[in-house]
Length: 410
Image (tube, helix red, strand yellow):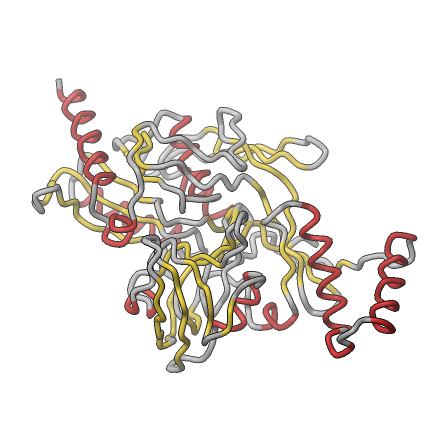
């Protein structure tokens, strides 16, 4: 059976609590398949895999550093080499240790620093996508876009996301020191006391303009990722919008790396009165449409969506669907471009393979893999605005919504 369909950017590790690498995407794993993951084995009887055995035997006999030629090193190197050759950063091998510790769980409470991370596909560096609100990482000064150069003094060069997770995670109350390079190229050591992390999803707030004054007719909702909690949290937030009599909504997806497919579709259908949410296209070209039910909670209120380079996968599905249905305009920066669908397969050694099994298209048929969504109103992303939530992108969204409301009132 298949397990874990996700729309997200990266893998969420329980203790780092970082992202949903997949079903539509990244960091946390959500079981939307309703069954256990299937076991996968790799044939080793072909000439191609026999050659690997031949190379391994030569290395065992002749390599200058025999201590380095362990069975584990040869196996891990072979696995990673196969995956790297595919050229797909979203297909990932999860070690038994990482899988045992809940690397791909979604929702609930975890011990760690509370941040989403991914690997830069160009430089290979381990990058902070975003710290969670109220997390130890945020309190310590970790910022979106930080590169993790070392963990407790050990260089991260050549590490995978799972390598980073295994070093950064740890029990509540323990401390880990990250050497990070900020967006301004400054490097510092940041000591973080790990804590118990409740995975955040939805945040409701009032809107403040450039003068710090409340904009009474507008509401603000941020979705940080799509987990099993998100649908209920979103309904509660939209109830606040309704009860408050707000006329417009700013939906912030700038730090959302994605999440579970079911949750993403359920949230999307809150804003559209039926219709196509996305189309999944598998390796054989077979198309599977995902349709929204009618009767959503917020199908009339004008919406502006804030997006940026950290908006990935599930958040791109939501933004693309609302854009294509004429329900929202996008303000901000080009999104990440995670247009793949991933599933989790159990392996015989206790590990797992997170494998890309399809691409997805927006309702208008746009493929965003490697491209992303282009905002209707381009406003460059800054670290300062991502950290505080306030800045030119937010103010542009306020102006756009105010113009829409004024036009509708005429």
